[in-house]
Structure formats: structure tokens, C-alpha cells
Length: 59
Ligand code: SF4
Image (cartoon, rainbow, N blue to C red; front, top):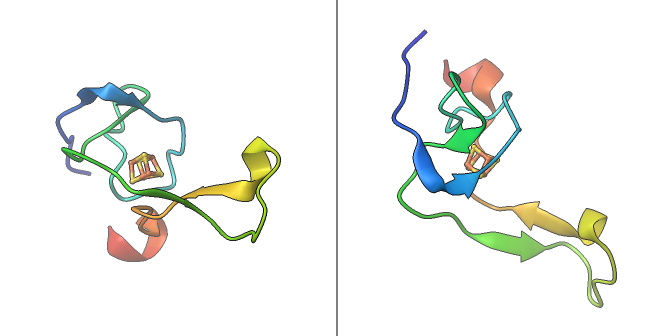
């Protein structure tokens, strides 16, 4: 498994994501897009990381 470079400006604990740096809780991308799947978001669960890539299929 490749060890990606951590972007210390983007903390993330989603280790299943192909963009996760794996060795620590950071994203490896230079930037991410956060979005929502709700018309009127009211809580954290309404938000999504739209840069997520399924790590199980990508690795
Ligand atoms: S793309 Fe999103 S979900 Fe994936 S590691 Fe980066 S911040 Fe986390």
C-alpha cells in the first residue's frame, strides 16, 4: 500500500478513502470539496466530502 503525503491543513479520519494518507489522520490532496446532499443542511451529518474516493476499489 502506497504511503501518501499528508496535507496538515486537512485533518481526516476516513481511512477507507483512497485519498487518505494512511499513516496519520490527514488527507493527501492539496484541496478538497465539501458539499451537502440536503436542501437545508442543519447538522454535520448533512455534509459530505465530495472528494471522497472509494479506497477499496481504487487500491
Ligand atoms: S478526500 Fe475527503 S474523505 Fe478522502 S481523505 Fe480527503 S478529506 Fe478525507
